[in-house]
Image (cartoon, rainbow, N blue to C red; front, side, top):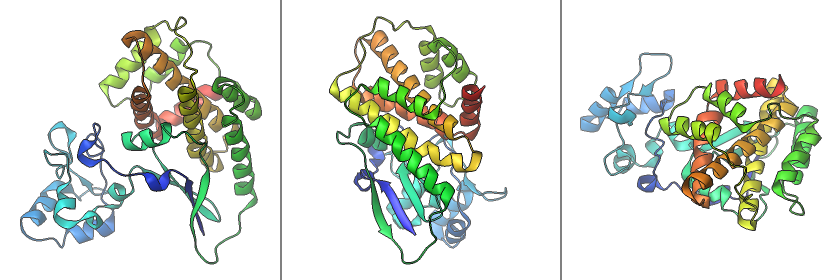
Length: 315
């Protein structure tokens, strides 16, 4: 079995209490059975806090969020009491993994970092070199790569090569990806897409406000963000969505739709950058990181929202 990841993967570090959007706030945090069993062996004051802070009665155990939807073990300094008292090895699986995600093939597992994490987003979108996939490790033996997996990986490599063709502007690269997928995005206006996104499940009020601004703000007079820095950042955005989203086509069969979803996501985030520039008089890469973080958290981490957008693309 092979373990594959983008070449920036090993550079990721959680910024803990420096994070402005803690993953310990506002998310339901499941506790896997093995970790739950371990937590039930903890005694003393911390053991009592674990008993009181976990709902283990339902199908999946989870932490009981407190005021402000905070994990009960997130202290006021922004650090995790479980880490400070027991060490990182005491974390449940989801906390250990986040913001990492995995996609599985017959002969390999691919690992990536989700844009919903601001530290991951900054790492990905500020990268200047073309993103490459690297072999992290390889176990002895394992299965052979199945034909369906091989075909998808080959096609995705072709699409990523189109996204990384720096001889042309990134907007044209996105159109080349759509042409390769033999699919065009429906709906002519940004306002129409904003209405579709407003019809999806939403978490943050600021995301609702951003979508309303996208719908209501005229951006035709805004200069295209075509400096080298922006071109590369938008390239990384396209590559990220292709790398993460295309593997799901092995399950739902929406090969062209997943490619178009990657382009749509890039286009919507770009338009949000233009809106930000209009409303604030300027835009910096840190604004792109925040917009991408919100998009990822609101869309990518909701299967229902992704499916609704795929339906909008394909109908």
